[in-house]
Structures are given as C-alpha cells and as structure tokens.
Length: 391
Image 1: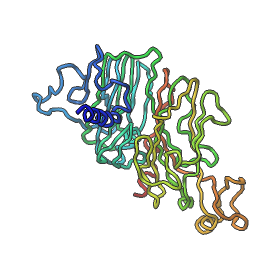
Image 2 (image 1 turned 180 degrees about the horizontal axis):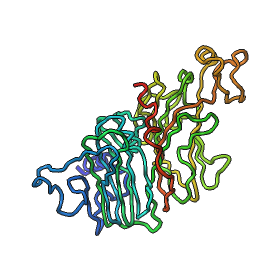
Image 3 (image 1 turned 30 degrees about the horizontal axis):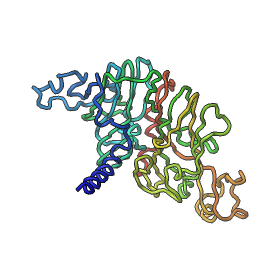
Image 4 (image 1 turned 135 degrees about the vertical axis):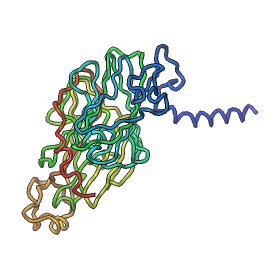
C-alpha cells in the first residue's frame, strides 16, 4: 500500500509540475497580506468595491459601449500600488478598427504614454488579420477576441485608454482589466512598455528598427513582426535577414545576433503556420508574400543595464535561374555575397540579396522610468496604406 501511495504521489507531482513551471513556488496558493483583487469594465468603470453591475438594476446594463470616429475613451484609471494581471477586449473585426484604433498605457503620472500601439498589433497579430492562436503572453481563442497576460506593475497610478482614429464609428467595444492593488513592489521597479512602427517600404541595407535605442535598465520581452514582400521580390524567400540586439554600449556590432528570420522564431528551412508558447508564425500567405511571426524571450531573458536597440535585416534569397526568370533585368538586386548587382552571366546557385520590404513590428520590454518619448504614433493613413490590397 505504501508503495502504491508513493507511486500516486510521484504521478501527482508530474501532473502538477508543468502547471507550476511558469510560476514562482507557492504563487498559486499564497495569500499575500493586503493585496486585493479588482476588475474594471464598463460594468464597473472604477473597479470600486461592491459597485459592479449597477446599471439596469444589475441586469447586464452596461457590458459595452460604441466608440465614435475620433473618440478617445479612458478604460481604466487605477491608484497604486498595483499590478495589471490580464486584459481581455473585443471589437468588430474590421481592419479599420483593428489597426485604426490605438491603445495607450500611462504609468505613475507621466504626461506621455509608455505604450502607444495599434489595437490588434498590441495583442500580437500584425496586418489586421484575425487568426486564432495562443502564446505565453497573448491569445485569440477563436479569432474574435484579444487576451494579454503580461504583468504590468505600477507604483502610483495606471491609466489605460483607447482612441478610434479611423473615419468610421466602431460598434460596441467590450473589455475587462483584471488587476490587484496593495502589491509590495521592489524599489527598482521596471515598467511595461511597447512600441510600434512601420516602414513601407524599407530602404535596402538600412536595417528595420524593431526597437530604436532606449536608455535605462530593463528586459527586452520580444516582439511580433509583420512583413510583406514587394514587387518582383515576392517570388523570393523573404527570410534571410538576421535580428541584431545592441546592448549596453554596442554601436557598430551587436552582442546578440541571430542567423536568419525563420531561425529567430525557432523554425528552419522556410516558415509555415504555427503558434507555440514563445515563438510562432501566425501569417504565412506565401502567394501574397505576407508574413507575421513572434518571438518572446521568456526562458532566455534579454537584460540591458544602460541601453538597448533591436533591428532586423531585410534580405531575401532565391536561385539564380529563378532571379533571371522572375525579376526584370533593370531591377536586379544587390547581392549580399559580393555587394554587386546580380549578373545572370556569372552568378549561379542560391543568392542572398538586399530587398525592400513592408515591415511593421511591436516591441515589448520592461524598463525603469522615465519612458522614452517617441512622439505621436504614425498616422492612420500610414498604418492603413496597402493593408487591404490583397487577401
């Protein structure tokens, strides 16, 4: 009997350990003194104790509200200390709202946001395409809603808002923000940040900046990237470019460097559709040359102590015969190997070359305040340009 009990104990441990692997010991069953749970939604916009669901005598009176064109709506204003634990949100799935709406986060009284990103890009999917997926930081269970599980601590105050920068009124927006207050936070607290940018097109030999240089101490969490091959270069494999992470004084050359775009997200020899905890490819529309992928540095932390910059090269590759067949002679690319234009008479075999692409990315990281002040996000027209050319 004792032997059977021991076997059952081992089996139970094997089943429970994976559930706890991402948590500190005891986190699921700890009862921290003075920490209280709160939810904010339109049913309880202040997260006030005992005040949820007041509208319509408590019978689902305010689960959502429309957002007019040009309207800016505050979703949450929370007095700290506290930690935002989860965000769920859904809107109509039209591209004008998925990329035309912007979400912002402000921490501890700063006048400018630490996060200002198009709505769907923030939740992990570029190019306003809705796809079901699950990662360690985000999920979209059935391609109709957004979830974020990134913990976001703050000491004094947190403000979350959305703005509909599209020319169309948006139907009902539903959301809830789940958080705790009264948390004990470290003295050297790092705050969550996110930055989005698009270059359409990129400039050959000028690497796309996923994250421009920021100063301070922190941790780079990772990024999601959207990429669209352009013109004649759509016939080629897009992913020969390497990610480069410049940390703590790196200038000419980085300390952290990858080996290729599909290698960055844990795959190899091409890239297909998959969604794993820390890496995935959510868009693989080869026919249209549209790709969307992510990499989150959770088991492999990327720390920085004074500054960081993250970039991605735009390089494509194809066989020499395919280049001759599908690229116009006046548009032959510059080769990476010898930095000369492709010559159909002398170049044979596989060739890597510089290629302009339409690239966007959302970078996620923690850092000490103050946040970098990027200025306003790129305008609606730049975010939407060429977005709906092909499906």
